Length: 340
Ligand code: Q9C
Ligand code: ZN
Image 1: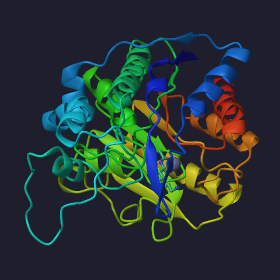
Image 2: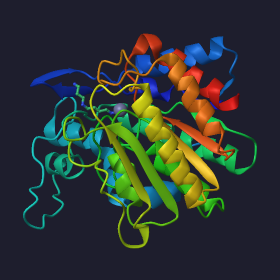
Image 3: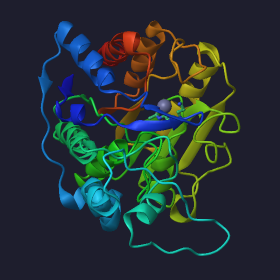
Image 4: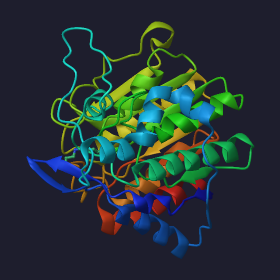
């Protein structure tokens, strides 16, 4: 198992609006630190990644959005003159066509879908290098060198082609899948086991037949990201039938989760995927502060084992997981289950 990680993530420590109050984000630098420390203790070697290619970033996201992310903090300083986190307060209404504004405050609303995350001084540096880890992990796997894991922070699966939200800015799992396609895989699957629906990944590939997206998550009627993640969202156009959602009730335990996992893996086999990206959130863990599912550390080992049964080249990308005391053990259990 090749592990890609970098220190650049430490520059990103954002704030979030939580229950009406601004708090330091639950998505903290400590998360990645705890994972890296645990993996090193267990003997995994950590490698830095390359910088992501511009054309790869632009195949997943719009050029305007990438340029916005790159410059938003500096523009916020100049145009708003504020050292506080850059965050939207207005979003486009949905009942009529809307346009992209010029002002940074308006663009923050145009390019986000929530106030659960913000842009701070190091956000671009962290997100850019996280995408680079995903690209490097995909390159490693595409070259036939065995499985790879990218310790991406910030996470990515909520980010759409031109909007950030849910702690996500650049969609690292989509970057990995697109890289596998660009390196010759005609059929790639993304299986998202994060507690939350991978809405951004779904949106990016919704009309594409070359990337199957599958997500196991809490029912969006009761949980973030609230507006998508239902079982009848099957993809559209050429991508019809290439999106699978397996929403589960709040409080679901291992039996429900593994029934969904087995069903998703079967669909991935039927699809004929030649490579697999696992969007590895560990927030389905029983003690996760943002989740309600009941998975144990051993269950993450079993997820890895189950995934390995497909005998596909696998790129694993870190997504959520907020039980900092257990996050290292949960990730390493999954990786050990995967390699057998
Ligand atoms: N104050 C991922 O797991 N809502 N994102 C949090 C708590 C947003 C989760 C509310 C949850 C986003 C990658
Ligand atoms: Zn999550």
